[in-house]
Length: 136
Ligand SMILES: [Zn+2]
Image 1: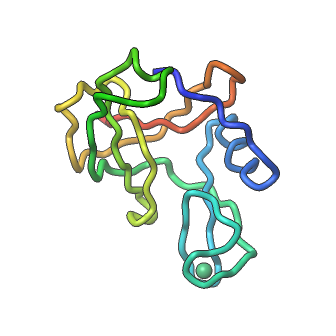
Image 2 (image 1 turned 135 degrees about the vertical axis):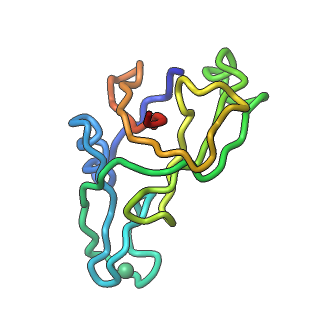
């Protein structure tokens, strides 16, 4: 399904530049050895502001999901109903990302299944964004 194009700023540009290279990078705090997403100015655990962008494997598991039948986002209405799943990253299961799980019918989402990241170009600008697909 077509997604809106995010406009990167100086703060989150490393994340979006990596997406355009088909790589997933997220913030890592060396002070407490933990990842975090979405990007923030400081570590939510220890307030360290010197966070590094670190590449992760792009593997995870489906943690939970809902089905959207009535979105207020006009561009997504033609795709209703659609999945919104949370993906727990392999490196840090507390870090989650959202996915529409392209190709997975609603009400057939395999909770706990392994997924891998893919990158989809958004129509307005070509900026790539992460999406997830079930492995195997
Ligand atoms: Zn920290």
